[in-house]
Length: 492
Image 1 (spheres, helix red, strand yellow):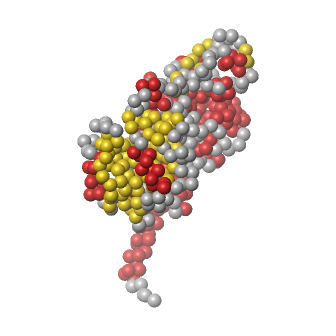
Image 2: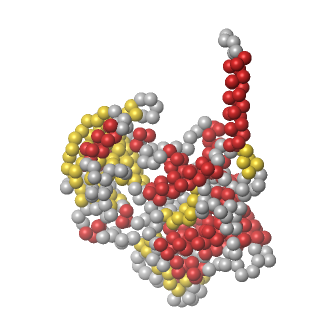
Image 3: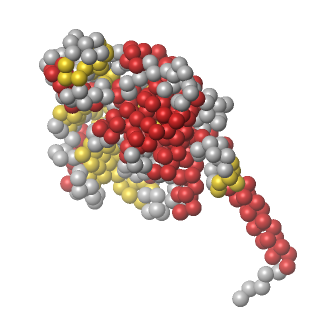
């Protein structure tokens, strides 16, 4: 048994006191939305850093929708609502992501995102204001900071799990934490509070918050839809129960005595003309085992039965039993380098401990294909299939994959998929275009189902069209009522 000397003991006490003081300083904070003191391990400075880094990561991962006028419109509505919050001076930033999923989310520091999929399904400017107000509420109430604190106290990190190996993360730790927040599920208490704040902020900003319940009814109807790169709204924003009814009651109270409230249905629909609807085939689509990517000008074949998921900058495929997996991404910081140069740089930087392979040509594209040995994140090493393919002077593709064991059938499938890459030469597939929304008045009165059938032969199913317009299939539509019309993508 050791004896602590008085001087050492006093030094230890001093250190403990400093640690306690630091924890108190970090942990004692006032919640802007409620005015209450609460314990947190995340400072406003850290939140701001997460937001800034997360913006780069999120927009790189999912893409910014290319419509400056629409972006300016969404930003103007968002800023008007944010000015009604308790933090009007945050550097608020409202971004439209080029993703078909119906979703909106917030990152700390005032970064709010809505997908073009969500914009397509809203019916008025007031509904948009309500959704943005809800997300603003998540920021002002510091819900992400609360979740991060709870996870840190529980001993978990918020790093975004790589599909293949921790060695090959595409973003810095702060950006990964921010992206990880997108996949976290808010608590029902958080959702209740954000609903209340969204009603309050949008009403004070002059919007008719009585439009919000319709938004939630639409979200309920599409909650089961899938097939996009981001989680759906209700998977990350769980319904606290009777959401539409409760929000209707909150809105009725919030707008009492207020005049000239903004709805702007026709004006909002006008903003949606020509909006890309659904998945954009320009950034890749599957036909059975074949994957086509018109923008990159390539095609490749994946093993039968593998499940796939893609974003703007990444494609992940895996066998159902995890006997093989493959991830394709854009290799960053490789301008002017050959595929072999990339391997040399990773080896020199200590990210690769060993490699076995060589230069190949895939079609007309130079490549390096082989296996590499990398740290596994747990003090050991693992073997991965790796390949780098120079598609254009500015674009290098990176492939990382593995089988269940080195050299097994799963690994051979991964290598075969990589070597199947070739140039996309079919002009019909190379020129395929996305579906875009049309906005037009109903030519006659009648039930929506019948009117939809008369609008064209290549439209999306009537049920999908009804949800898109916030209507029921048998709901009566008035002559001249404005409708959003979407066609199916015409593929070869």
